[in-house]
Image (cartoon, rainbow, N blue to C red; front, side):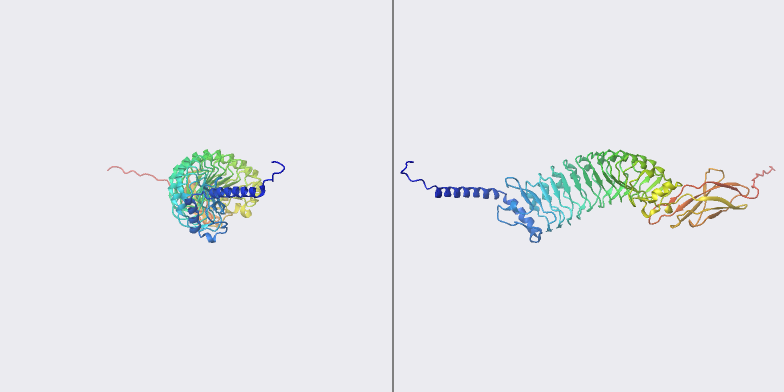
Length: 499
């Protein structure tokens, strides 16, 4: 440019160029925003319409023009905004049903619509969302069965359908969900048995099937769930034994099988579960001894075994549970001396223990006082069906012996005393008579042979009642002996002479 040339008027030209560039960028942005497929947009509009969207708590940007879907509240799209990836509308006052067209959200990874007011069935079409990683429909009023098609969601890591009104069986196809880490189906109305196929879910960490009318046994295959941390099957209608295979669940922290109809003994293999913090086996029909192996559970915080039919003594090994805060053994058929080792349980919380309605006793004041401290109600002794004391022989006649004793402290529920007799010390004993209640301190045994020595012992009995559905029969008292008056009648055989 020479000195005589005029400068190029750059201002207007640059402005035009910038305007053109902005238009191109806007067009490109509009194309990107509008790239979500029409079928996916329609699925979102269907969801809004079928769940009373105008009443949602947050409706920000919903029903905006095409290209704005990725700005709608709860909707997250892929980085290129070409597809919906997440739909998070939990606790947003959705009312109505889930539309089948949700199955058109082909790249969806998360659906979380928990804590709403959804009704109707779970759409089977959700089974086509093969990229889905988490499906949370919990805390609604969904009805119908769990679609077997959900078993095709190979990438699913969380399936949470709890707190609905779902019915029918648990689909065996859920056993195909090899990536599943969490399965929550609790608090529904599911029926039938627990599918053995759930034992295939080796990545599972949380299995909650509680509060359903599920029946049948606990599958032994659940022992294959080596990563399981929570096994919660409480408040169902399960029957049969607790599988010993559960002792293979080395990572288990919570075992809750309470309030079922389980029978048999507590497997000693549970003592292998050294990561357990919580064991809830109460309100079943379990019998046999409390395994001493439970004393290996060094991390255990709560051990609830109440309202079963467990018998025998409390194992001294439970005194090893140094972290125990709650030990509830009430309403069983436990008998014998409370081991002094339980005084090592110094972390028991206030009202954290309960030994009532058994046949337990202790003559050690330190043990009695220690256990009264955390005992619910502050007194564990007064409800024990224990051996009576002070058994002695009273009046003796040719055909009767009267025994006297000191009644046990527990007279509040019906029962009595069973008096047994034998011809020799140590037995064998036979039941001779039963008293009408536990307040009496005497009984007369009649129809005895004259001049005959007898040995007696007595057992305390408490009938089933509201706090314990079992008949409790104590250990026997000590023996006492007495000989009836008169001469023993000897039978002679008279032979007739042959005529």
